[in-house]
Image (cartoon, each protein chain N blue to C red):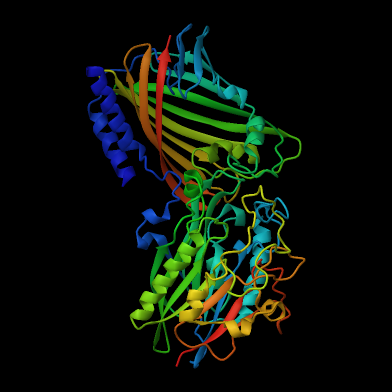
Length: 370
Length: 252
């Protein structure tokens, strides 16, 4: 009996000292308070924004963790996992040059790495703030683990960011559903999608900003659940009489898309975890946003033919091909200027081609403040 | 918070210390197992006391994926101090190649190139008994010799990173202090502070504070539990982490 008591005492001591938790790799972001789940950023030098205007430029861009067009294993075009610091800096310099050329007042970033082995631990959010006219940022992780024991990924911290020339406040990370069909250990080490929310005031106008990046590979309806959560959140803001701008990579194509499966850039076969099954059965998933809010590219402009739709495609995994589907969106319950929504598929007057910079092209729109 | 709790309990535990620990069991001092004595743990290697104040240790299960052997020799033993050295050889190439893979279990990318690696750890140990405790000062280095093409990244994980740093950088000096003594009856405590000096200009140092308690039921059975707090400069910046330790030991 005494031996058992000693063993029990021992185990208690072990538990106290061990700091054992259910999250040994610090990957369960939902366990953290909001203060710990959101990071506020500030540029090293604050730049004074230009004189007030009636409108602001809003951009959304999935920057593929500064990976440019390196052939990573998950696209099945190659087998790269990690980048050197020189590669990251070179790719980020291209992204920064494009952002400077665009000169947004607000930019939503997806797949921004802040402390990941794959991107040489470069804090990409800080790097953009320090090298553009943007001053403030908020960041919420979608993928964070001390070490991901798969494919050599290692330490990762990647997520959504909202950057602006103007101060951001009251940031909140709203978790989205995990992919239910994934086994527990995959859920533990893999992506935890979120909706990042923050407040901004520009020229006296209060706006709620929402940034997001939904699931790419779910086949069990998780993506639709995530879209519904996002819709509920923006609906609440709208019902409260507040103006919002929602931007991000929704990994879903618009209704009436002519091409929705068998995309010409698919390189992964059906045995791969990154095999694309297309969007059959998902064509109406975005309709609820179009029905209630103003998109940067409305359905009339998007059209019902391939020749009209292809001008707004914003994604391809094939650097030698062309953009072949629209996955990126900006919506508001306010007002966008005319037909200002534009996907920067090619080099503009800045002669900076966007194809080499990421597997996504930036989407830009002008938002009316008054 | 956890570190404060750690220190408080350590200090409280020191107050009840009385006589010296059971000399049968192996430890991190300059003492060696008596000749013929053998020990093994669930996680610890098999150890055997040799003649001429030597001690040999081999991890029997890990040996098949990371061949290893440790020889500890006590060179001098006086009333006032003991002096020993410990030499560990490992061949980590096979393990690293196994861990360089696609999918789950890929600690390193599948594209890694692992050379032939021969790692030696050499440590000098100097132990003195004071205030009924045994203080051991250690200093040593990891030396890794490599043959063939090499292209693999660090494993930037607490506990692992400082011990594998030399695989990419040849040389890692380390130093530490170990304090051990009797806590209460058959309970022995051990506190160990270890510092790894990473040799690249920006690499910095990694420190480990380890505290454990061993219940030595007899010469044949012991249970140890504790924790190690690791802190230092990693490739991603400064970071700290607390990790548990546990083992069940058998002596014969």
